[in-house]
Image (cartoon, rainbow, N blue to C red):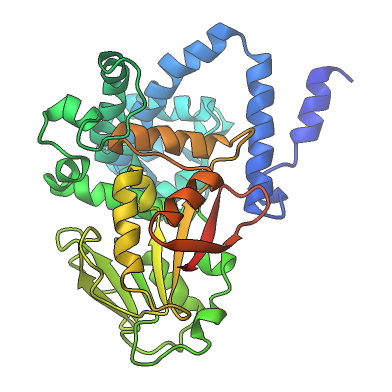
Length: 393
């Protein structure tokens, strides 16, 4: 057999469901990406970075806006032609043919015959998951893409120093000295919505549900009924509390508390009556004292160490020694061969917030500055994220 024949045979039956865990699947993806880069020339890689990826985004965003993925999902999981997709969306067949042909060339659709396509799970998700298309819209164009374009110039101007000051970062370089990332996002309702949608997707698609990592039964044991059970600080839409509630539907109403800024807390009703919403700024003293658990999910990676330490001290000030726990659900940078998802997130934090992902050692050092100690790290082998179980010293 030739090398090509051996490769084709080895990969024939591998798909999303071929692996025992998400960690195994991501490791397999890394092996495949590594192999792909080994067989590409420098020009092949450059072509993808500068031509393929931008044009793929153009095609995806246009098809989202035209309603193609949504109509396709409603039409059913069966082969369709570009002409049928154009008819379903009242668009130009010639244009739709060019766009879906490119997505098929990128293996994002399956071309089953001439101008006939089957949706992949990704394409179906874009038509059925209300939040996922937002990642291709304002979140991309006005946050990730716009800000990332400013990074090289900003770093050159600052003498290539690592950004650690959230008052002097890329966003100030882009908009002026009084700007901040969160005010920039909050100044536009669509920008705000699509950032929250993207974070919902991150929680749903990228991270293992925290009750699957941490033994949440332990929080119910000896819990005091007159206290909050779990306080989710900076919890956005409350999807982490909802994951807890689904595992423990017996929890008393109002014992799960969602905290976020008044402008950030969703206007919609809480996901369930067990979840109470409390407006709160985590740079001020924590008003809910003596809770069984305080929960921070992907909050501290948004802030440089000085600001992150202030948040932690406010939590520590409300904790009851021997009873309260702080649970921090975050990514951890491996010392060797850190996965791309973590390094990507680290550079996004640098770009948007002059912050970053942390190694386990850096997490321990930061947590100790607030008079807290790590009792245990709950993390699966090869996983990019885990939960720090923390108590007062």
